[in-house]
Length: 95
Image (cartoon, rainbow, N blue to C red; front, side, top):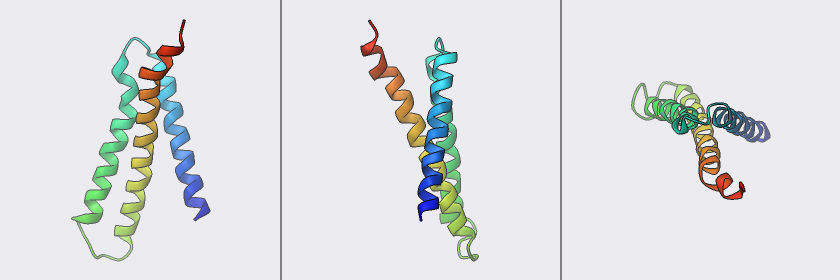
């Protein structure tokens, strides 16, 4: 269980870092920092769809798809929170 938590924490840090870098490097384009979160949402929903609808009941494949969905949705949440912080919280602290 500790490995899963560390893996999810690593994914969250990686996607928060990617979002932060995109927000700083391409600061003129506001919506580009949301692209990692949107990509993770699409991938996470796809794997959840595979686990629930397609090929259900074939061994451990459903469990693997659920785990991949959880990992992708963790990246979505961390990327979205980082992008929202960059948009709404940090501009208040600039002089």
